Image 1 (tube, rainbow, N blue to C red):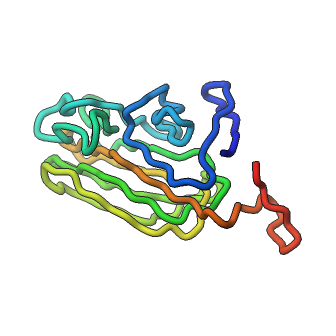
Image 2 (cartoon, rainbow, N blue to C red):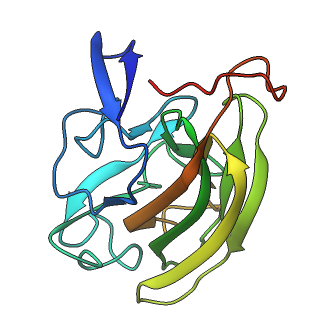
Image 3 (cartoon, one colour):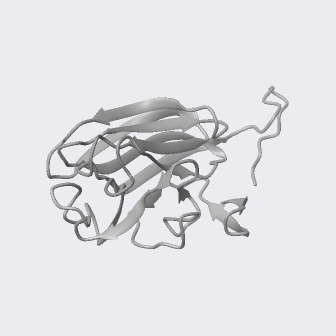
Length: 196
């Protein structure tokens, strides 16, 4: 496990180093620890995803239930959350390079926007790994992809023109490189990897 200070909660949190991390959002602490394990936070730079059981509050958009279990996360695009409002769900820093990610997503509604899965080494400059736009129908879809050695992942969603653009996520799995810790600072051959 790695230990990191969470400024939002004022507590030290632990995130996994060597095992696949799985989240179905059945547990919840706060937006700063939306998966109750210190790996995911939401609303860091944009609007927050909301934890939900059952259907979303708005008809004709969003899922009617979770992909797995009872809970999932979604972007509420009604009220002042349209048009084109952004939402984010981001990991805390992984000490090992992230090598793969898989997840379930729902993009049901007449005015869906665009979701991007992004990766970063510093949580400020992001590269897009995967993107989907538009209405995918009233069903959960899934995606799985390789990640080329980043420390952070982020789902960034920008809603469509009106309130029928609720995007949802569930059942996210992240696998870090189990053999090679990330170097912090000097990554020359003489570097001592950060094993904390």
